Length: 222
Image (tube, rainbow, N blue to C red):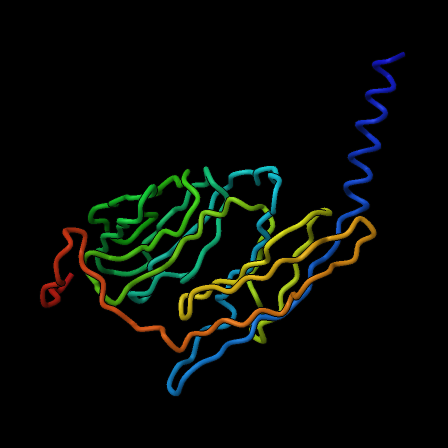
């Protein structure tokens, strides 16, 4: 009988958690200087719990393609343990790599085709470059939080999350990030500021080095 009561309590708790979930809706704005045009729909927004841990999101398979000497998508968000395939859709070779701590990799040279894959276990920001073409870049966010999304072209975002205290964080490659404390109440309401402003006026585009930490040589025909 006691076991039945415990099982019933667990079911009730799970149902209560689902019922107490709410949708956090807000907007990201930018402060820019003349000539800056941050890509608003590449702004990643997520909820970071305060004082408690969220369950991990299940790992999955993703794709980051090389197309017309461009990495598509430019910004990718994945759960830890996920695998990213890097197909090459160009008629030339590429050599994607990253020196980001915890997720370093080097795919070596590969031609047009399905390409190669890489698993990412460590949460954090992974800057991806091509060792052949210095203008190619992408960013992979390995997300410790399961509650994340991208803002739309107008800066609007919407994330569903269970009751609890969070920091809502917005990140954009041009300007870094902004954050605000919020609380999702058990009645489904959200308190705190869900409007975030990223100040990108100090952003400077800096040319990265190759995988040996050196400046790129004049391009060769590949």
